[in-house]
Length: 362
Ligand SMILES: Cc1ncc(COP(=O)(O)O)c(C=O)c1O
Image 1 (tube, rainbow, N blue to C red):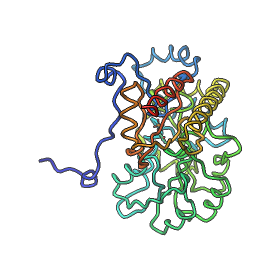
Image 2 (image 1 turned 90 degrees about the vertical axis):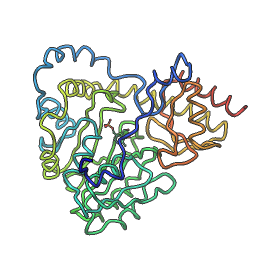
Image 3 (image 1 turned 60 degrees about the vertical axis):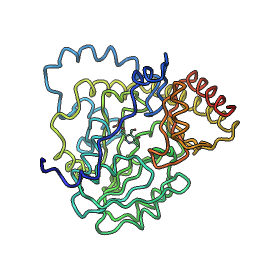
């Protein structure tokens, strides 16, 4: 038997949900609607397709490892220096780089629970001590997270809006937290769903990186920009923090295709606004439906809702999948008796409502 890494013994590979084709076959369905991964049902900006044509001629050449064009766009957009940004193959990779760069055996890291699973997964691989702080009403309990932070704490993770609850922390609570957090503890603010947030709840975190040099913000193109399949995200923070990440980063970690698509997507603000507005309308109409049947959910500022179900989330998941809908059972996310439903197209959500009504009537 080969000698493996001890830290991996308690972990297993990420288990992705079943693919739609597999489900169609298994349940004899002609159509399956996936509302399980918080993807953008409208697709990416239509301008991207055309823009990528030229890039397809260059697949024999390595990408620009410095991500120059996209870097310039991002630094102009946020008025930051070129050393304040790092790009990754999705924020999944950035999370991996962060834990690899900062955590080692004996270090502590503080995170909410339930929250995005990759913080814990990657911290465990680096043999860090994980301190999890329960959400309160679905929201990060920042005062308790601060209490859990000590001299050994290298990273505190704040997922805002939080996956899977969809909730946000208040700007006041965030600033109070940052003011009291030890300045040598890295605070990672994962804003994967930032674009969907209500503008009055924005933390304006990027403008705070000089005030708090220990703050690192993650943004992704996978959600509102509809580029999940290309894998591209960025981190913004103090140059010294970014440099640590650049040391562990692979030289060509974002593809030419992903860089180009991200560039076009970030420029097409009109399309982004359309996606965000439509998502909001569809989410609201689904919320009204849930209100009408008395099913509770957390107030979400994202493209998903965590919905309480009268049966276990797994049972609800099984019922929905038989009827052609894939959602995430809360049991897999640390929230029993819930399902997490990504907001799809209006017509998809209308069909989902019909199926849920049938469930209630049976
Ligand atoms: C909170 C959060 N962070 C990060 C990610 C990873 O996104 P990506 O690697 O596609 O950028 C996700 C994906 O679901 C997420 O929900």
